[in-house]
Length: 338
Image (cartoon, one colour):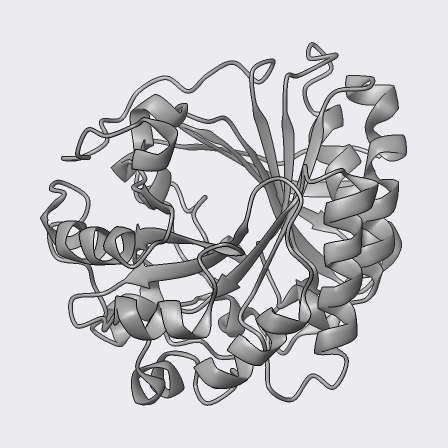
C-alpha cells in the first residue's frame, strides 16, 4: 500500500495512503496504560480522573493500537464526526483492510512482537456496511505474523447500528461468533449509544441509527459474550441524558458493560456546539452518571484522553482527509512505501 503522507503526532502516526478506490486514512498509536487514563471500579482502578497529562506512551512492544478505515468517508452524518466531510461511504476492499494493518506494522520494523495488538475498525466509515471486515478479522493473525509473530491480537468493531442496514443483524451475529470462538473472547464489540433519550439520539445520529428499544432487541439475540462483555459507548456532552435504570431494563448488565468518554473536540462538534465542559480536566462531568450506572448493575469504564491525543486527531470522529488540522506538535512526512 503506497503511503502518501505520514503525520507524526505525540502519541502516534496518522497515515494517508492510496487504496483501491482512492485515498484512505489509518493510524498507529501507543497507549498511556490503564493506570493513566481509565477509571474502572470493577477492575480495581478507582481513582478519579482529574485530567490525563500529556506524556510518553508505553512502548509498542507493550501495547500497539492500529485503527483502520472500513469505508472511504461515511454516509451516516453523525453530528459529532468529521468523517462525512470526506465524502459518502464507499466500502474499503479486503485488500484495503489488510493493507492498512500490515502497512502500519511495516512502518516499525524494529518491533517484532508486542504483548497486545489492538486492531480497531473505527477510523473512517460504519463497519457494519462492509462484510469484508468479517473476513479480515478472521485473517488478521495470519496477516500480521511476518511483522509481530504470534503476538496477541485483539480486534474491535464499533458500530452506531444504522437502521437502513438490512444486513446488520447477520453482521453482528457473525462478529460475535468471531469474538467468542475464533478469538476465544479476545475481541470487542461496541455499540455507540451516546444517550438514552431517543429524541437526543435522533439528533446526534441524524436519524440514521436504530432506536434504543430496537438495539435492545438485537442485544437479546446475541449470545452471552466470552471474555469481555459487549460495550455500550456514551460520548458524553453537556446535556447528555443517561437514564441508568432505563438502560438496565433494556440491556442486561450480565451481557453489557458501559464505557463513558468525553466528546472529542472535532470540527463537527464545534460546528454543532457539542462539548463536554471540563471533561478533560475534571472528573465532575462523569461522576453522577458513573455512580448511577454502577448502582444499576453495570461495569463502567470511564476513559479520558489527553489533550495531545485529542489535538493530535487520533481520537474517534477525526479525519485529516476531512480538512481538520492537527492542533498540537507534529511533523508531516511525504513517503512512498509498498
